[in-house]
Length: 565
Ligand SMILES: Nc1ncnc2c1ncn2[C@@H]1O[C@H](COP(=O)(O)OP(=O)(O)O)[C@@H](O)[C@H]1O
Ligand SMILES: O=C(CO)[C@@H](O)[C@@H](O)COP(=O)(O)O
Image (cartoon, rainbow, N blue to C red; front, side, top):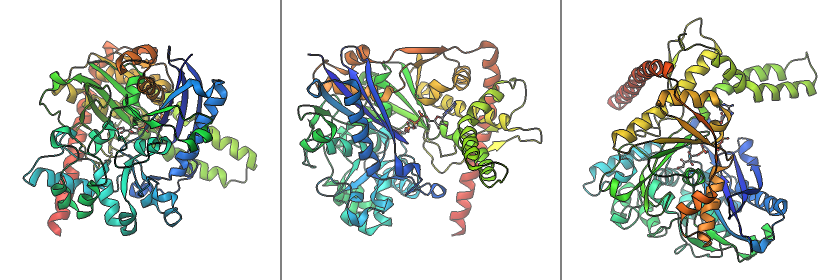
């Protein structure tokens, strides 16, 4: 009997499912569903960095995409042996005693604090700062040490602390909190005991300061100093964690019926999108996998012997088994990558579209057509124009911190800056400066890995930007002075999830073998252009000067505010 698996990848805007042949990784069917409430901007306040998602968006997407791929592929349900889910993270949500998301209960259905707190929500900067202060000064274990030494407002405890303080009702009703990948896995699974449910090692290790050496999560004593509710919550969370080659349970009856599958299908332990993306792109030692989309995640694996007792400074953590069981998984990333360009696109298109929509010069159908054309072609247009600007022509210098800095050295309070604007600066000049900036931000990460003794021999790009923008990929190859290959799969994270599913179902003995057999092919390679590398090196120094200036300026402003209190 031929065996098939399903990988589900929950991204920032949409979820996609792929149905994969376990023999060779061939994709038989794929389906994408955009989150409806999120698309309308519901429950978000971007001006305050509040980004929340209603779990109904995810549940509706689950039903639609999986039913679609089952139907489209024509594969018999009993031949679909396993499912694995990856999601963004840290994207936690509060649940009741039965593991039901609070926002699915009538009393919380419109309350953003009861919803999933998306990775890019930065409402808990203060709380992250408090966690960092305490970890460094409380006299006990520095629980941030395997998280790069700095806890981020993008992560689990900071978000829970923030919401617990802001919303008494949610704090009291939250029996537990789950990472998005655990929540959805729990939803599908027939294992319905929250206390023993297998939570993701990847999520716990990278974002919740879980580590074997201190028996799991940070101690109650530590958490109590932040807030007694966190110490109480610890008892209702977990001690053990599991890698995604393990089975979390069988598909439960309710969801088997909804999806057109059987209860024999097993559900693998959940994971994060970036880590499964690395598996989909055949990650191996000394290879940096860059998942380049809205943000970036930079993933590496290294043998535990090489890492030893070392803690790699300024990254998003080193976690045994977060990518490949038995190897150390290392994660870094940029809080905004494609989002920097999306911000600029919106800056240009929004006023133009407003004028267009209020104009009497054309009819409504024409307005709609033009609006879509402007929205869809702006980045392409700017790319073509920016490509024409010779490297010898001055363009502004920009930073990539529009959503703070994830790594190296997390600091979500940082803001973006642009310098060296003149009357001659045109939109494509700024666009080019932004492209340079996101590539320089990437270079800082590569430099940090290498400075910390983690050697990079190869770079693999996956994700929307890697596949859509040869301009950015060529710039990146020049800035890193390294060749970069791009994975051919449009859905590398979903494919990676499917690979985990195949191992959990016992089809392959381990993740490495499955990844080599089922992982994506490569479609393009970008080589550094010798004649440009030096010029980028010079521009990088300008980036560094602006970065130092901006960071110091923000520090001084903060000091001024503290001093004046
Ligand atoms: N032609 C393009 N060139 C550069 N960036 C692009 C282009 N088209 C889309 N993007 C960027 O890609 C990002 C989305 O990446 P994608 O991988 O599809 O999504 P996600 O990160 O949610 O998984 C957006 O931030 C958008 O600005
Ligand atoms: O931070 C992580 C994983 O650790 C990602 O989930 C986060 O960057 C979101 O990824 P996308 O940019 O939406 O693909």
